[in-house]
Image 1: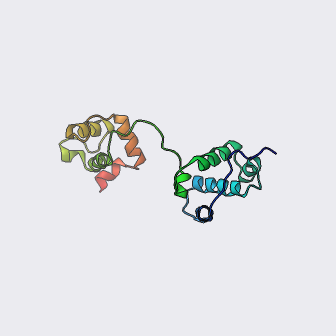
Image 2: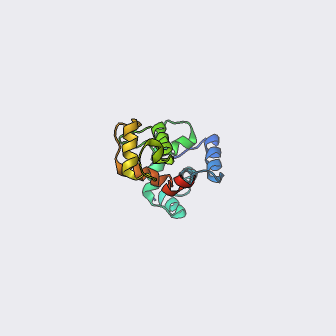
Image 3: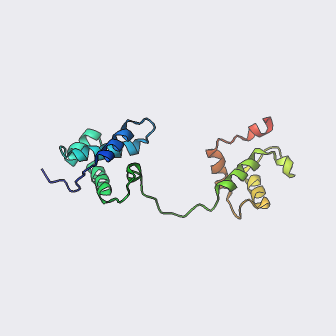
Length: 159
């Protein structure tokens, strides 16, 4: 049996917090799984292959999370189990702007002088730009946003 590469030595407080996370019903499943990994790795009775088999995951996940646990300098147990921040371009549209777009979509086009009864993606996008809510936005972006919000164009006229 190969020696364990990242040896976990939990304090009593860390063990207690990890067990609480595993038992708590509102804990996200990915966090609970990671907590189980760390708890099982602390016992040093099972190697990574055995832990992976018990949890039904690949050994690379065991190595990944035990390594992160050992190398982390974060004290908060739950924070240590969360995903790292991902890179990428930050959003150019703020939450407030999205709220204004949704509020506009919930109004009738006629109240803005648009001679139609229901918004289309193109007319709504034109009105968003005309009002200066955002500097630029595509019709498809507006459509995707409304789709995620369960926006229904027929409910606007019903009230």
